[in-house]
Amino acid sequence: MNRLLKVFLALGVIGSFVFCAQSIFAFSHPPQPINLNQGSNPKVLHEFHGVKLGMRREAVKTAMGANPENSTGDSEDYKLTGDDTMTVRYENGEVKAIQLAFLDAKNAPAWKDVVGDAEVNELGNGAKTARQTVEKEKFWVSIYQNKEGTMVRITISRI
Image (tube, rainbow, N blue to C red; front, side, top):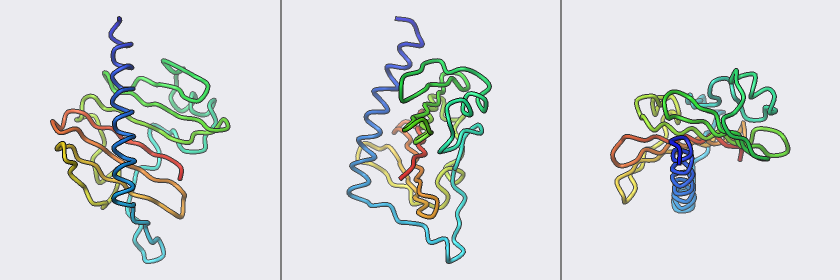
């Protein structure tokens, strides 16, 4: 297998684990909505490289300045720096979720820039996660870092 295929397979396995862990975490720790009426408007990650929720496929390609490395009916994978990737998931032709996988954690944005002042939780396996929901804009953003601190996964998704 070539290296890129191995990376995509590894990301798929990691992504599945992260989504399961986030689902379990979400049920045991429901996200607290941000009350934007009290002046509490923490800065959270709304977009990445100009890609935003609700964009159409062609607008994503324009923002990325390239065609995706891999494309299916409901997702596209873009290569970022090194082995880092961005997966854009579509629903009815519009961006529903943006998933970022930083295999080199130093390339990832800072936690505060992703989830603002959200509480960081340590999972039983030593990994860390945090999630912030912006009810007014109907989306959430989460961040996950493995126990070793070498890999970071970020998801921005519509509610």
